[in-house]
Length: 581
Image (cartoon, rainbow, N blue to C red; front, side, top):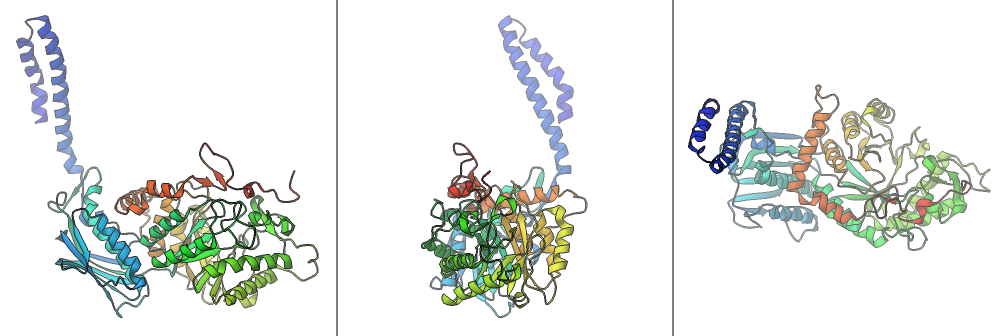
């Protein structure tokens, strides 16, 4: 048709010339119409030509490809068959009187809100049923199986954690099945008949469990505020992505993010959490099968603490921070600090004591008492265990491995958890070396410090991928921490959480291809899938995240005008004694 229009275009316009050349006005009107005609014909020609070419270049896409479950299940088998999306669905097997079922119930209630026009209920009589059933066939405590067919979806689980994670997959499966055809990329065509106008649920089976026992995300309250609404939203996002530990870095050189009741720290920070706030976060996280691990820096990165106790400062630490001077007065203060945080935790919990990037120094009068970094760790461990026993808690102590490795007293080697860290893909060889150094049967339990460093303004997950894939070789690796340092820009750096959670659960996927040496295809793939996920999961809407966050802060200072560069609290500008000049 396009070629026909091109060959006849001149003949047709000459005919218009003959008809409208009798007067000047007619000619003026004709010229306007002639220009319009030419443009119209050219648009038709171009459209026809591209329309003739496009189908041969289109990429066929299945409905299943529009359902990028994240984290990717350990095993997924799709039959290729489809079930029309139900107009009415009922959920069975969840008990509203059982607190351990609350997270799964909340998840499905949120799912109902993103399925407009679909009738959904708990315990109803719909022919399409979502059934949850506890089963001894599932061995892993966080594992589940899921089958979807024409009659509905069945989830088998071992514990309520597996039930909760199965509910997250049900959410994604049905939300993507309902909305997935909205995410067809330019040039792609759906292979299923009428998929663009009708909605289908794929028939499939899933057998799923996490590769790592601990899948953690770290929020840096020691450099930036996290409001209670933001922390709760973060917990909901973590639950959807099957992360199970919220690592709260409570204080650092810039800010103290915890407001002590019996001590002065944190009162200068208008955004610090109280003990009641922390208890509420612990309670809320448990609904989403998430444990809270506070990090209480106990040697370095303590300028916001020695701001109130300058006599306990041993001088400038790394990166212009401050370190505690080692001695009895520092130990006494640490015990008082632990004594306010530990009671807020669950009966069985983990506590991180920091210990990274510190400078060794003794308090006056402590020079001849035999203090060493090893004996210091022993004292801190004893203090933490004493406070835990006082409050009837079972506490596991975590600490950073630090740049050169942290020497441990022999008696603590099997009682604590160490954590080396690296955040860049180019650190891949060093990550392998760290794992060879710290990993192995009979060695100290370890976590892997991954995520993004503070200058990755759009987030990162590449180091996480390497950690999680290489860490599978070592039986003492408990899991991974996705770090978000120095910033509360969760929305802007969400790929750290989204991509990292995928590798923490199933390290083998997604795959970095050999023909993608710079990771551009993988990053584009992850970014596109994350955007689709944010649409079906409104909790991750960037506007809503920013609304809960309030003002953006980095390293203790506001980022944007009218407060750009201003400190959140006076501790940000604290100068270590002796360094005033």
